[in-house]
Image 1 (cartoon, one colour):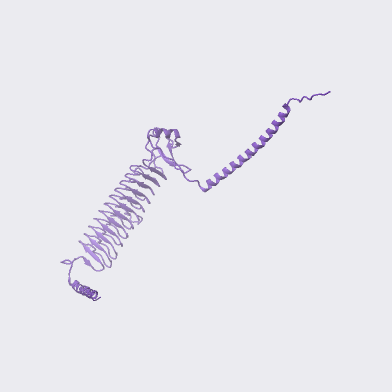
Image 2 (spheres, rainbow, N blue to C red):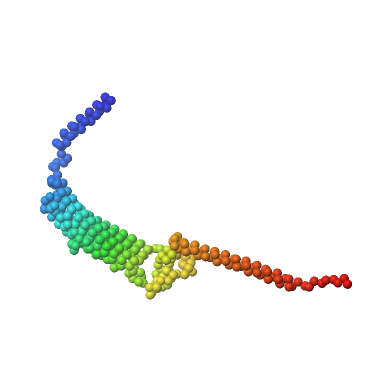
Length: 352
């Protein structure tokens, strides 16, 4: 116990000595010259030039956060980043990133000119040079909740919202479209529609104005070769790679009314035709994989209907069986009568 008490006393003594020495020590010489009141840091010509009561702002670079006065918790790193900003909680890293932002809040821009022309848009994330470059350049504040990761991702977006772009030049031409998801370089590159999904390099690249289209696979255009752009459609690459059944007619995959995968062709008039089983067998014999059909469980309504039909069939079979038995009994009686008629007359001897 005495030893433990002595050790504790030594530790306390060392702590007191260090506490007294620390205020006299300096980490770097000379000390940093960018520290200002209210947790503010500024480095660069005219950085945070107009700041008045704003708290927790950091500006590093010429004219970074130049206009902010009462805005809080902004971080700007790079010449001209957040130059005109008056809002809160924005982060800009890169020359001219969020350059024209005024009242937009909670935006993050990483990359040269990322979100450069954003004025009032909020809750946007742009990572990559020129990502979301024109977002909300009209200043109406409608370009919100967009995520762009990649060079020129969503670079033309004006009023579109809730778009997700991952890859260089994804959703490049989108202006006001909303709810789009593009994953892969140049995915949905020309699309201006809404709620489209493209996964894969250049996936959905031929779409322009269609809505609610799904294109999965590298270079899957998302456009029907016969009908052109069709909204509410789905295109998946490499499901079927065989020879088309008829010249100029693509082979497509669909889900039929019973919930099964099948195969069909589309003719020049846009009419769909089921491929005969013999044709599918021919394709398979050539080493081509046909799309297998998928069995799905019956719905309760269909199951009940099937059970009723089975009961009706069983009742009908029982009735027919009874009728056959009755007919067999009648036939047996008739046969017995015929046998009696066929018997030869009996000769009786006369004893007289």
